[in-house]
Length: 163
Image 1 (cartoon, helix red, strand yellow):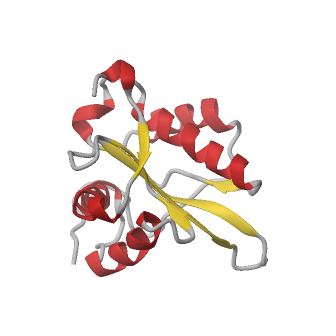
Image 2 (cartoon, helix red, strand yellow):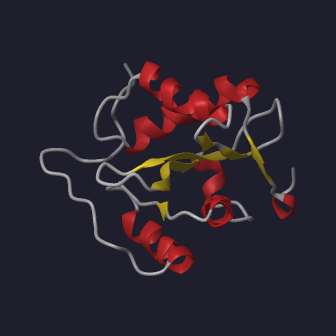
Image 3 (cartoon, rainbow, N blue to C red):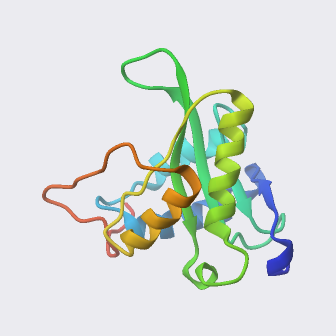
């Protein structure tokens, strides 16, 4: 796959090992709590089956995955109406500066999913690392933010483990 020909595909259950590896890396880099592999798998597997979610990835089938988005469809706690909720957009560090705009492509894909379903997309950044650059990119893609996240007594940064 050349950088000029980056394509997004939907991950399947055949990709579970690679997707879990990437999800664990994302949690280790951006988490503010230790992650549970069991809980990660409970969110990821249904998306790989396209059961109330999708997992768009950049990478060839059966090969290494360079980045992913985890999208789940469900209701907010206060309404029966559904939304597409982004749980993660993550690119392996070695591909972040590469030509092709992987994170941007996954964000644009997430917008297309929401547009295709005719429901809102809830997407955000929960990070204390390179946050300003991420916010600038999200503003270019999604427009002005609707609020902000705050962590008290924790930091979303590298160093958290996986249980």
